[in-house]
Length: 225
Ligand code: SF4
Image (cartoon, rainbow, N blue to C red; front, side, top):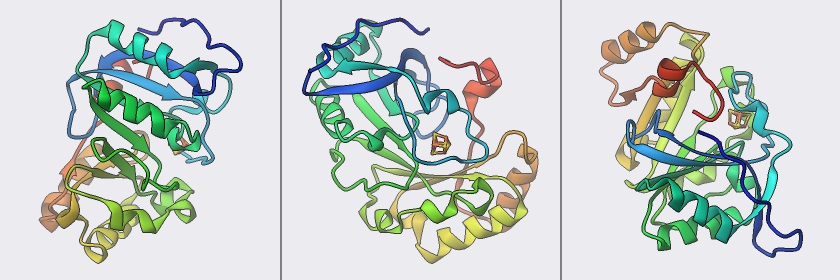
């Protein structure tokens, strides 16, 4: 559930703009199902056509890192997911991730794949989107990120059509992505039937993880869930 937090002092040197902090279950990725505190940073330079967090593009409030850590601790979960919007669009996100790791949390970062992940603390599991043509943001993929991936990271494709699937399969093969880390394919919720994607993966013996977004099944995309 969302809570209103006290806003940081205006001149705090390590402040970030946040849309929400809430406790839920991780709805996707390798940590699916774990109680997780989500720290949603405000702002994103992309405009994917299927975006389900457009409410995080603008607004939000300034918080300093100590305030964020105190609120995260209040929820008492072991897993923390820093998400957005695009969290790396705020430079101070790097310091926040480091502080969360220092505090002993299992930290993941959900990022669009459009910004450099090179400075992210190696203790963080980076969940990197690769934007397909169907997202309308394929030109934003920063391909140099692929060389930085480790087995601790994860790559995610949101598949909008058969054409997207074929494109994503080609990228997986070209970059040998499954040798680098876990690779996940998700159906774009309103654009293809999940079963279609599942059948394509099975027919091709593709070594990727199919996933449905658990939070959409449980809570129908309600913000703060
Ligand atoms: S990168 Fe994520 S937050 Fe940004 S527009 Fe795309 S789906 Fe939405």
